[in-house]
Length: 115
Picture 1 (cartoon, rainbow, N blue to C red):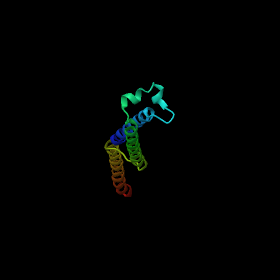
Picture 2 (tube, rainbow, N blue to C red; picture 1 turned 30 degrees about the vertical axis):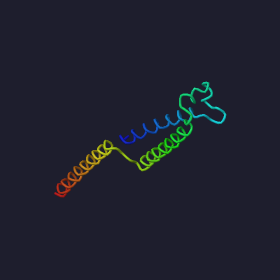
Picture 3 (cartoon, rainbow, N blue to C red; picture 1 turned 45 degrees about the vertical axis):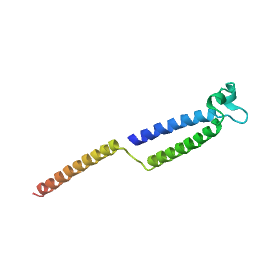
Picture 4 (cartoon, helix red, strand yellow; picture 1 turned 30 degrees about the horizontal axis):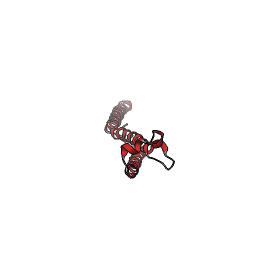
């Protein structure tokens, strides 16, 4: 797995956890988790906390989806990191060298067989 995909996976997980936390601390019409703690969220976060939390949730949701789409695109198109590409390149060179040796051996064996 490439370094970029590992970083993107970590960012998606982090954004998902932050998004979950933001959603849980937002007060709902029925009170939600904010009222479960005796209204502590309102006194700590202030009167305008709802609108700021809503804006932060919207931004974090957009970031989450963009990262997820980039990750899906990279994986879907078979993106490979430098390590994987160099390993594949080495295998191709080994296979090419083996074919070249086999071709050379076949060419040298043909004149000997004709004698």
